[in-house]
Amino acid sequence: MSTLILTLITGVGLGALYFLVASGLSLIYGLMHVLNFAHGAFLTLSAFVGWSVAQALGADTWGSFLLSVLVGGLVGAVFATVTELALIRPLYERHIEQVLVTVGLSFASVALFEGIWGTDPINISGPAWLRQTTDVFGARIPNTYWVLMIAAVLVLAALVLFLQKTRYGMIIRAGVENRSMVTALGIDVRTSFTLVFAIGGAAAGVGGVLAMHYSTFVSAHLGQTLLIFAFIVTVVGGLGSLTGAAIASVVVAVLQQFANFYLGGTGDFIVVILLALVLLVRPSGILGRKA
Image (cartoon, rainbow, N blue to C red; front, side, top):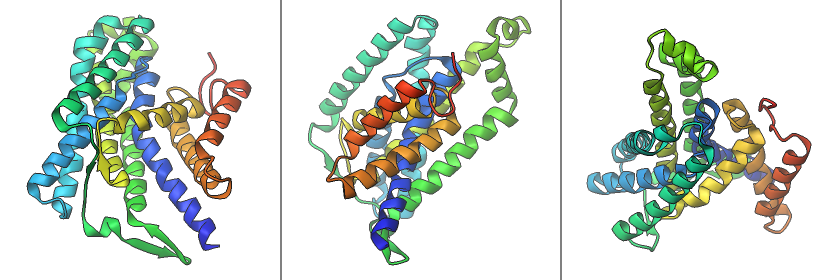
């Protein structure tokens, strides 16, 4: 029983991490229709800068941990904003060029990060509580998973409230539906679209710092590895659906954990099978809108 509980809760915690990475990706595609293959670079740079901040302040304190998360979110937002202004804005409605540019930025970023921080993974440490466990019906759950779950819930709530309850959220949703009409009303839609990228980058930044603590290391390839699962989650949940991404994150991660434990480490293979089934049976995803 304890093994079942451990597998289930760690699966949900891993799903929370997948959502933190995929939420910005899903948001940007859902509102801007941009498949951003450089999303992993936002995550990796935020993790490296967050690690540097924590090292400077003392990596084992809660203050440095929380500040590194905030700085990671800020770095992700700034990187995403610069990317949108310099590379994406001239290419709206030109999807092939968007893919080529963002893929190129992704590869260039990995090379840059390796040049600055080296090619070897850097082991990291955080507050001692994160390395401890909590007993749940006999299952020893690593505390890192609780932090991931709390962060994912907060990010999802913040994104939904922003889009549904704020003026900019209303402008963004209106601009997506009818950009010319919103522009005719004297509203600068471009600024709102840049804000979407900044928010997506911030979510990736927070996810990057927490992914670093989950993995206990940071490397130039951290974002690239997680980006694969982020795309799977985004497709399974439905391109552009935040709620779908949240549901798919849990489904994918729990399935992966159970397959790894009970089916001899075949988690990644089972996830790919799930992706194929979704594409065959329901190409729009769990909560995606049919074209």
